[in-house]
Length: 545
Ligand code: G16
Image 1: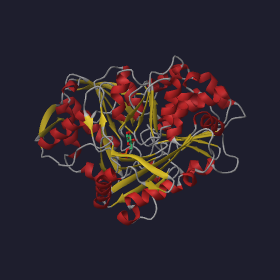
Image 2: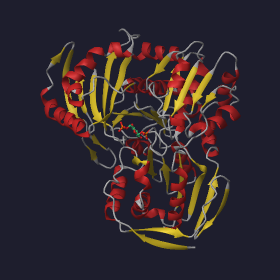
Image 3: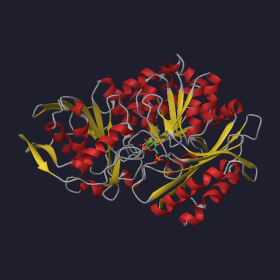
Image 4: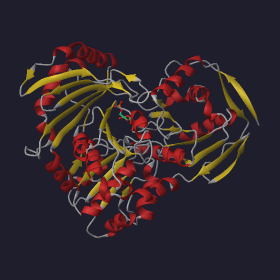
């Protein structure tokens, strides 16, 4: 068994996006493509030499083969201790939990998150740092720079594959490896935060029914261990809980469009009281009540407003944070609690410094991501347990919980319209057009809305002083209504235009309209200001949430 050095040449497209490097599987399968990126991680993150690392993925196609390559490269690059999830499985939040619990130097997660899998689908690699969170921009940039200059990678020669299906340990060169249970550390953390006894008695009562949909993705084994084995939820409370390499053909994105099976159940006759789903790698969540959808922006605000009911948060919240396109519902909760609400660019990595500094306890994004300072990633099952704990304490339904929140704080009507897979030139052209026109918008009136402010969002990190620019065009109207335009940083095919539309109605106003209807005028204004139909050739969004 020896370390070999293999000559290679750079690929020029390995700059990580919003959340790691995501490409088509075939691109990752090209000779040296994965190896180059992994070597660039080892070359730029020197603490991994003589250090410790956890690796795992969401079980998608190419997960197992990629893991064996990474394990052999870790040994060849001087990693001393390596943990790997059994069967190659580890959810993104579990990786964050394990890095923090065992004080590891980092983690590598194999996932393209909510993007489809299978041989024709997507694959991805994310590097998480020693705080358990996604690598910050300086780190991803350093990895990218290495990838542009790479000329060789190191890998162990002539070693047998590790048996990923059996718990066990061994050595490879100077590296000690261990195949670990992917669930137990995460479950233990959840038990410390939530009142499991109370949730269990609610789940076992004949008056309450839930359904959790793992979408054939990574949270399946976690859901079985937590809901079936630990909380003894009745049979039928879980669906699609076996991780499949192609997610059973599903697009494992928990929203109203792609989680059709769950949505049909929750909006059908005799629907359960509570429905939830997670995405490919387990960091997103969607919450549903009986024929009722909770927008992610409302969800995080409701969790924060009810945190005093939950054991892990009873001592109070230090502060809150949301990404810029997320609605201001969370800001209203922060006002009431007398704490700060930070506004960051899209991407979980921007919450890292705030969480590390103890400034923020709960944070969330409109893109179905919610979490807290318990780890440094968003956490799908955490949000589901948080909701179940609230419902178990209050005895209210999901709809009653949301509506009583609106009656107290007012309602931020909210929708996101996605135009997926559009021509990148058309998408960039549209953004350039907005960039050149927004300065002239303030003072203009469109129907019932007067533009108060317009800008291209930029963020000054309060800790390292770094500035992140061009994070989305914001058009803010008098009274707090908003339209935001930005391009997704996670797609792999064409470009995705996201249009975020929000209108605030105070608690004395009309709180119970259908969102698309309440926002119809602003939706039309968005098209008028950006020329979406004309520039993209699309007359309707691909996904509306
Ligand atoms: C990733 C990031 C999130 C971000 C989301 C959407 O989620 O971790 O912070 O909000 O992408 O990004 P975009 O609008 O650029 O597509 P995930 O679940 O894909 O890792």
